[in-house]
Image (cartoon, rainbow, N blue to C red; front, side, top):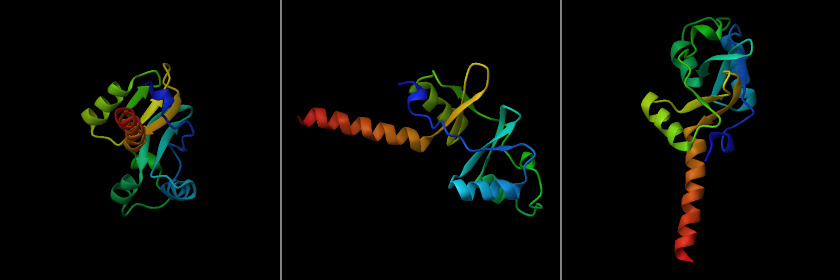
Length: 132
């Protein structure tokens, strides 16, 4: 199963120079726990609610998100398979991976929860086949 079939295409982003306060408001407004940080049209990092709670503590609300984001962005291409994706989750110890095209342009995001939801459905289908 290619990643493009299960990724979230509507990615919530912030600019690298946006403030921590703006990022927090955007997370609350969109009800998300992470934002992909963009520098122009290129994804350069991710900022999570955990980054804000730990790295943002004591910083001014006007501080740019670039100072607290995780800059080691883990990416995968949308034509990659589920095995490659789960291996990246394990190898890098992350819960979210940004999906990009061959040129590094943002296409989506996928979380461990998204993968688990698909797997649970597939297992239920298999159980149904076994029982019938």
